[in-house]
Length: 327
Image 1 (cartoon, one colour):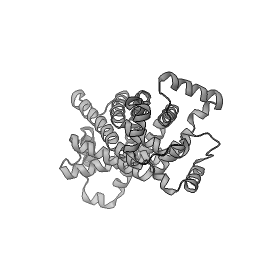
Image 2: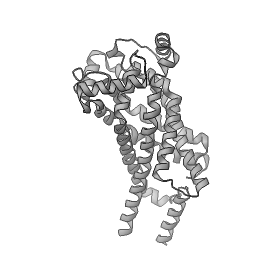
Image 3: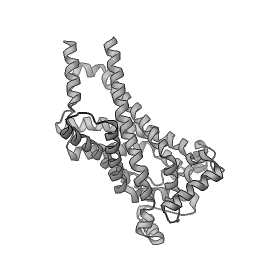
Image 4: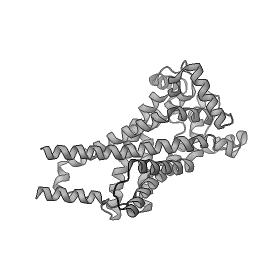
């Protein structure tokens, strides 16, 4: 009897359908807890690997976003090369420690929340674990991104400050928090929060929507329930390209607001900041500055992130299954 239940659950998984777990199992809490822990672990690893891989490009993009310098691939290369010559190879990853402090909880919360929101929306709309339809798929991604951004926002601001300042200004992450609190006030830690939330709704929504949709299309047309790793990377790259392109102007606005205290500018809210950027630098050169670099960095990061999450989830499920068989 026990073996029959296990085999049935595996078959449902392979067909892209989550099994409905009996109430007495849920009441024990362990399977649901393991699922949450696995999602948190997989998400944390996915975020860390993805962000570390593109950290030099990310730092370069932020520097251009918060300055009035005109962006080009040639200027970006010069900036990276000058940084390497003047400060050494590891300086290209300056601010990455702050990125890890922020991205590990952010990615863990986002991926875990996405799994939970999918389950909640599936129950609400009557899908019971089946692949969600487009609108709930978008809503699940948007809610996941919003939840993660709200819980980790000050760490994002600290990371942006460390990326655009010399080592002498902020010695470590704690120093950034202390100095901002003393010199600019605690409210500064949430400067740029509004454009972040407005930006993460289309970004996370479209990213998760695109990735999940491409996986579903792949399963429908290939007959394989699981894509190959390279296919996952390609799906994630498409998701990152679409998601980041849709929300990019708000990303520029939030970076300007986050770093206003160290760049000499005063930005009050979203619309005045946008107007000032457009007036000084133009619409395309201002609000879309660095977008071409994001078209390189973003798809790589998102592709690695989604792929790492999925493969880690699969590995953890196999390890758990092996442990259960041994018992």
